[in-house]
Length: 275
Ligand code: URA
Ligand code: URA
Image 1 (cartoon, helix red, strand yellow):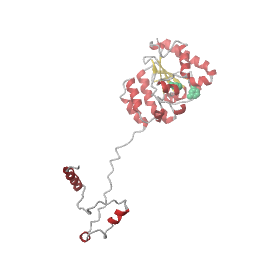
Image 2 (tube, protein in one colour):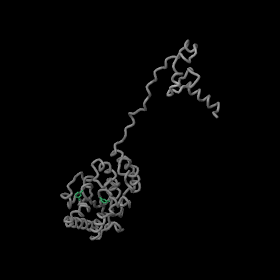
Image 3 (cartoon, rainbow, N blue to C red):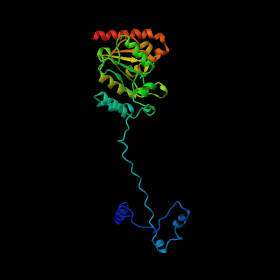
Image 4 (cartoon, helix red, strand yellow):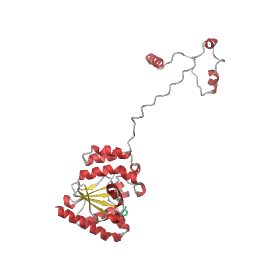
């Protein structure tokens, strides 16, 4: 049962809202035809009401909108940039990517694919985006092309599981969620991940960065044309960078293996020189 104090509160609220008279004793359901008849003036209304007809309702004031000027939704690149600004550790970076709402791939992925390998490694490898197996396991390059990449590097004595910084690598992708159907990420998808990738490189602080394929080259160099870029050293902000073709491309075009082998030997040579 309603408490009388509730009624008093309700009345007080109505007065505050500007209700200053009662115009009918019976509630009227204006959706029912029966009640509509009742609601019409004359028939059921007593003469006293006609003497003193209800004042026309004041025009409702336009509803005040919340101040929109200050609500300026951030674009994904700005939001990613702000999210990484305070990131100081790999764990923080992983959380920032998990929090970032703008990449639709997250809706169709099973796992965030963050990284693998030795975070102390002198060599960092940047791939494209996770595929089916990576999405299931939550680790980069664990499928067919990953096994090929591991094999090529292990032939020079470098592996992701080695604990020595100069004989190991750390590996991640440009995009950390699997694109549906393994499609290539488009420009604005690469753009929104660039702040995360840059922060990732800054945290690992490698001596050599290897870019595998066109997507990684787009993210870091803003360039495509991997078959021309491959095998040539670049230096950006004191970081030695080597583009190589993507291992998935090698699986389809095995004649490129010879070139990649030369590129990986050049990387090994540089690591030895740095020891
Ligand atoms: N290809 C990539 O670029 N990254 C992976 O993690 C797997 C395949
Ligand atoms: N396209 C890519 O994205 N990567 C390659 O390695 C070759 C072609």
